[in-house]
Length: 104
Image (cartoon, rainbow, N blue to C red; front, side, top):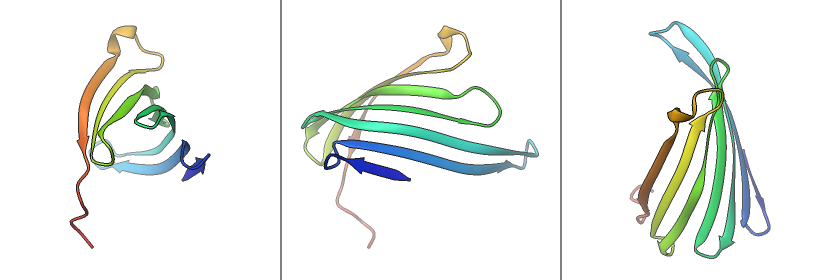
């Protein structure tokens, strides 16, 4: 479920789901909450927390920037798992290329 505020300058997202692992013979409730906000027209910030009913949730936050509006973004994020040693962090940098739709 997503909610838009201030003409899409603030987006709030919530997810809930269920997963059955045949290998582990385990059922898990999955969940996530996230927010995205526009800082300036090409720069956006985001934060997300997600997890499952067993284990520690994961958080990450970062930014994305439109290099070519509506076509090419650069993004970076930092994240970690709550309740675990600080050396379990991750950092990512990437590009997202948006193409014209190829399916009707």
